[in-house]
Amino acid sequence: MAAPILGIETSCDETAAAIYCGERGLLAHVLHSQVRLHAEYGGVVPELASRDHVSRINGLIRAALGEAGVSPADLGGVAYTAGPGLIGALMVGASVAAGLASALGVPLIPVHHMEAHLLAPMLEDPPPRFPFLALLVSGGHTMLVDVRGYGVYALLGESLDDAVGEAFDKTAKLLGLPYPGGPELAKLAESGRDGVFRFPRPMTDRPGLEFSFSGLKTAVLTALPPDADAQTRADLARAFEEAVTDTLVIKVERALQAAKLDRLVVAGGVGANRRLRAKLAERARHLGVALHFPRQAFCTDNAAMVAYAGWVRRHGGQAAGGALFTTPRWPL
Ligand code: KG4
Ligand code: ZN
Image (tube, rainbow, N blue to C red; front, side, top):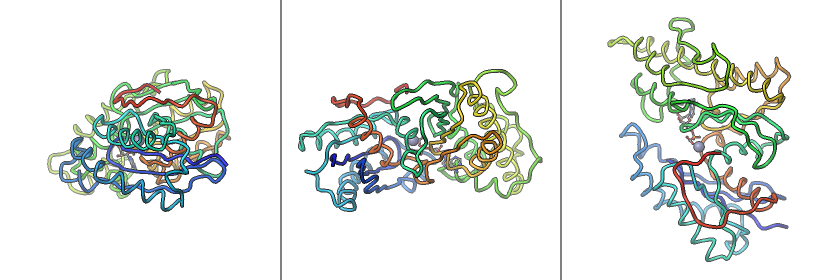
């Protein structure tokens, strides 16, 4: 049996460790969310994030090993998120991973955070078969990717400005909602009424697979009365969520047709959005497209996807990275 891989995630405000082994699957995954730490500042404070990662990561690795019943000496490699992300936060996971890999004499495997998101649905049963279209929607990215196999990715379109999660978070702030804004806005939208406000579906009136979400937040700001009551805010949240999810669905359908694909994978934090999931499920059924989501907990940041991506690198015939590095920006 091939030795299990430890995965470490510290790219933003979640500290996580997980252990994956091809034959036995996911053996353990543990996570600490820093949401409460950053809440009073209304967003992630990078320095606080780094410090909190430092204080948590060793305990989480120990917990993951314990849960998996794996001793450090049994590990076959240490995978970590090398980027993109907050540089100080990334450095914590990278340093711990490098130290551990060096002490154990096993390969150090740098993982691309967005590739890990993209592969997260592989942890579900049944996993998607290649090729597929991936819609990656997170706080930092909005991407449509043509995935032909492990490491064979072609970017079909991305956001020219705000990522979709960022648009959710900024709009939530405008509506007076606490951090983290995306899920809060989605919750508020549930009590919003349909059709009270209507916002554009940006860039859907022209060909192409690019996105632009920054104008939507301005549209909400313009429509927001200074003395807006709770119902008006909910109506605005609803209209915003409808505009964003409609836009994503339109572009997904276009990309499926352009790339002649009949499988769709949705990943990243915004993939947890219920409205988006429902709309995509409806369209996929209509189009005869197979739809794959990671479970809710693996939509947002986690180490299970990092351990899995590390396993793929180590055993999938791709060269394992080797040298220690981190990078705040890294094209897929
Ligand atoms: O993938 P992720 O955990 O971290 C990044 O790599 O960015 O994604 C976080 C993003 C945040 O912008 C958050 O507001 C958004 O995903 N998000 C949601 C929902 N849950 C998380 N946005 C809309 N609806 C949700 N239910
Ligand atoms: Zn992420």
